[in-house]
Image: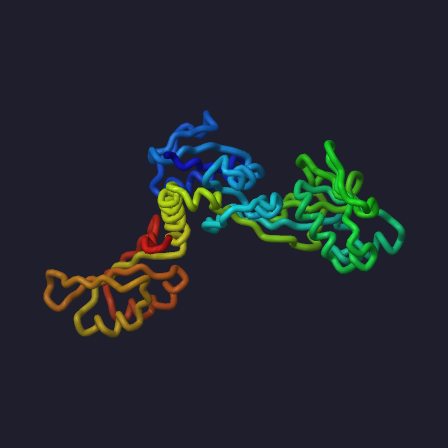
Length: 318
């Protein structure tokens, strides 16, 4: 009984397969097929658009998937968030033309337009997040109460308030203002593209990274253990990126003082060396602690060797 795993196409694809490689999975054929092969015979891979993956996992068409947190929130998918994979970092932001010097927040955008009797057009791929964000804004509620903003797509429209209208964008969203839209809601990694299109960020709606998600029924089925294996392997890569594996040689009289100062993931491994009175110490530490303990290591030990671990697996976790 294979676990069906949906992985994202597009901007997340390369980083996803790099994480898989570090986790020990060998994937082949991803350049030519949407059904690449993987070296685990209990996993069946499929490459899909990240926008689709949360819903397909929620509906049970896939047991596990990887998608951006932005699309999980946009689709309101009823899935289990198994692991933040911490790559594909983007911000979902509201932006307007830079020339609008007096508008520096979503509230000031609404206040300026609505107080002057103007309607507002917003262009975005994130219709649901944007509609909720607009409706929860205190200025919007002051003018319209619980009235739902109008949302427009080529196939349907909903909402009762044409004064604030949200239009589905099919890409190149940053090119829409000011002719097609007054504001946009779009993802950005660095803000460079917005800057090049003479836009400025006025608010951050949410921050997003890639997440491993699972179908809730699959987690209660015979596939549960394999799903947790996948989580453990990918989490190991995330944890490994935050750790360093260090080896040092230390004299017997310096061993206890060194161990007292040395942070460790569990306990350091201490082994006697061939030279009497010397010990080898190896341990895994948080990357951020390395520079704090380096002076102590320099004073008490010799022969420091540092490795970047590919994975750190906490195997006792479910």
